[in-house]
Image 1 (cartoon, helix red, strand yellow):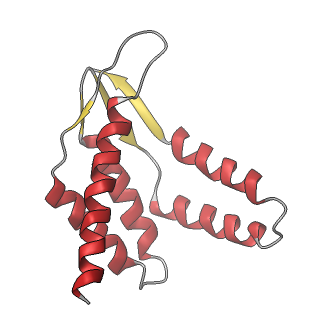
Image 2: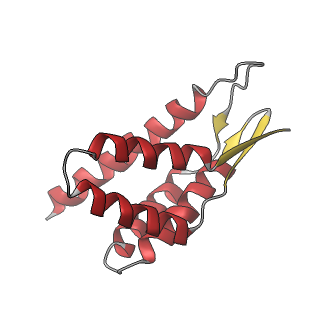
Length: 128
């Protein structure tokens, strides 16, 4: 059992490093953004644990996902402010549609694109 916790801790640390890298490489067509991520590793791990616990509920994970994405956006530091405007209900129904349509197997790639485009479209960038 301790090995399982060790794997989770390594996964969380690597995921945190990936978030830092992704945010540092966000670019704009009209100006350099050079953002950094200011969230702490402890808060990141807390969100990961909350997400794991919320998966045991029927619908709570969607609201945790919404809160987590808002926290990620608020943690971005630089010359632009980011915000996630999607709601838990919007995440829930889109995921339900995604799962139902993906049961047909053929449209999985289109549905992944549809869902990813929605998540990205809910991130707003406001110059600061």
